[in-house]
Length: 239
Image 1: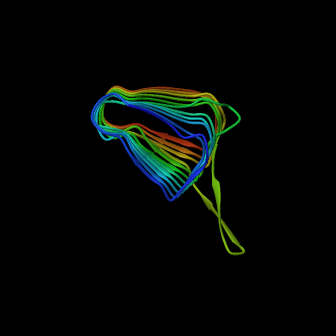
Image 2: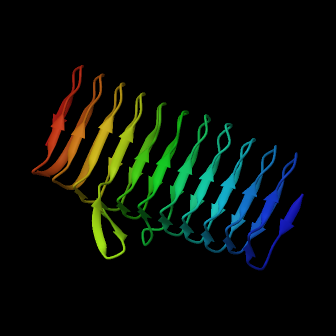
């Protein structure tokens, strides 16, 4: 089936059925989109605010071209591709058990005060923009993580009081590869068991990197007031 909605939706529920469905949306507010069984495609051209998107089942392809604000996206168990072109703000992306692909594709947009939990499977995750005050977990499996932008604290404002929230990066169990090209400030990076390879291309300041068991490799170009802690195994650390 094919469904094209050219106007804004608000308080709407859209649910796909069995078969390969194609859904095109503009903007959505307080709405729920559930893709049914089958290999489905979703294209949302505008902002999704306080909304939910669920892959359900099948191998799905989701393109979210606008901002995702106070919303959630959940992949199916079979392995979905999720492309985000706008900002990920106070939102949650959850992967399934399969090999998922998550890409924040635009360097001008990033993840702020958000959570990414890719769950199991051999996942591929990339952020072209900045990560601020967010928690990023690639889950168990042999995963790859590429972050081109900077990583730093985010600001949480309640009333007139502003506090800082740390960015936390977690590599699960498995042989993971993580590449960080930008600056890292006041962040935490933790690896699980397995032979991990971590490349730190930008300046790392006031941050911590903790390695799990396994023969890990860490390459850093600049460390200031930061720590790298090895785990059990033959680790190689170059800084």
